[in-house]
Amino acid sequence: GWLEVLNAAWPALATVAGASPYLSGLMRRRPAQLRRILESDPDRHLEIIIAETDALTGDAEAMKSPLRVLKANLHLLTALADLGDVWG
Image 1 (tube, rainbow, N blue to C red):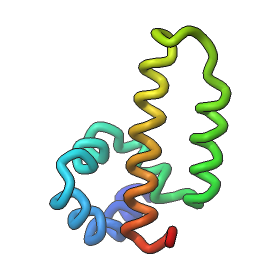
Image 2 (tube, rainbow, N blue to C red; image 1 turned 90 degrees about the vertical axis):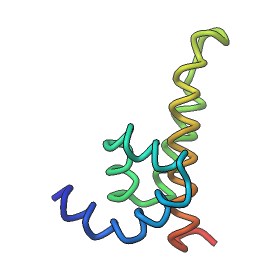
Image 3 (tube, rainbow, N blue to C red; image 1 turned 45 degrees about the vertical axis):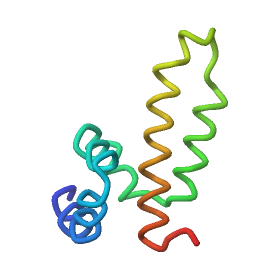
């Protein structure tokens, strides 16, 4: 099923990847996250990212890595939802 989803989305993803090395890198390095974004409701996915961010605990050093991952997830979700005209 994942290959079908990826192939269907590829025309739009190729444009994004070609225009943004940062987003292209996120898609390559985080294929599982890309799949979740493509297969889920973007609004619900945003709620999950916010909830995961709110649930983080610990000192600043312990939160650096998980915050970096959540930030990258948010960047990719926002870019794809915005460029795909899902979010106005």
